[in-house]
Image (cartoon, rainbow, N blue to C red; front, side, top):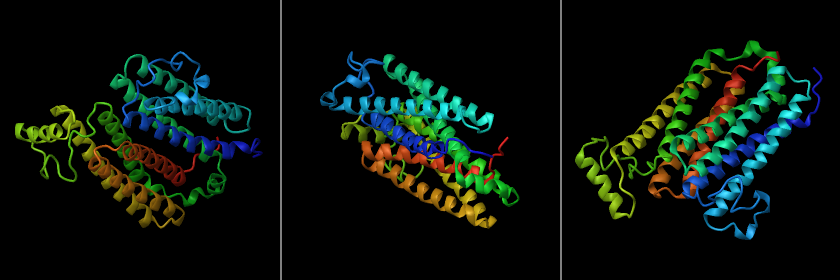
Length: 323
C-alpha cells in the first residue's frame, strides 16, 4: 500500500501527547477551583480569546484562559488531522474515525462553554471530563493505525496473543469505570470526603454511621474545610474501591501478559505496572497533601495515561486489519 502524506504519522502522535497536556490543563482548572474565573464564553472578559493580554492572565484567569487556548489549539490540530486523513490513501473507516475525532472535539468545546455559562453543572462537567478520555482513545487508535509498529505487526497475526484479550478488556473496563468514579468524585466536591489514607475515617473499614460522619466532619471543621455529606463519603469510598478493582484486574492482566510469553508485549506490561504504582502514590499524596492542585492534577493525567497504555496494549495484542 502506498502511504501518502507520511507527516500524518508524527502529527497523529503529537495530537495524542497534546491531548494529555490538555487533560492536565483542565485538571489544573478544577484542582484550583477556578472554572468560573473567566465568566464569559467564547470571549474572555469581552475580548477575543487570542487578543486577551497575557499580562492579565493572573490568578485563576491564568489556568482557565490557558485551558481555553490549549483546547483551541487541539481543535485546530484535529481539523488538520481529519483533513489529512481525508486526503490520504488510508482505509475509509480510519478517515471516518478522523471525522469522529473532529466531531468529538467540537462537542467538547461546546460542553466547556456550557459549564461556564450554566455555572459548572456537575453532570455536564463529568461528561466533559469523560469525553476528553474518549477523545484520547480515538487519537491513540488513529496514531497506532498510522504507526510503523503496526505495519510490522499486521503481517504477524498468527502470533497475536488473543488468549489475553479477555483480561485486557476486563482491565480496560475497570479503568474506564474508575475514571468515571474519579470524575464523579471531583465534580461533586468529594475529593476529601474521606480525609485519611490508607485508613477510612480513622478505621480500616467504614461504618457510615453517625459517629463515623462526626469524626470526619470534626476533622474537616478543625482544618477549615467544608463539611461533607454521607453521599459525598460514599462517592469517595467508591473511588477507592474502584482503585482496588483496577489493581486486581491489572494483576490478572499483567500475569496473563508474562505467562503468554510474547516478549513484544513486555514493554506494555512494564509500562502499565509503573503507571499504576505512580497512580496509587499520587492518589495517596493527593489526600495527604489535602488535594494539592499539582499533585491532584498529576493524578488525573496519570489516569488518562493509564487508559492510553491500556488502549495501546489492546491494539498491540490484536492489530486492526486494513480494510
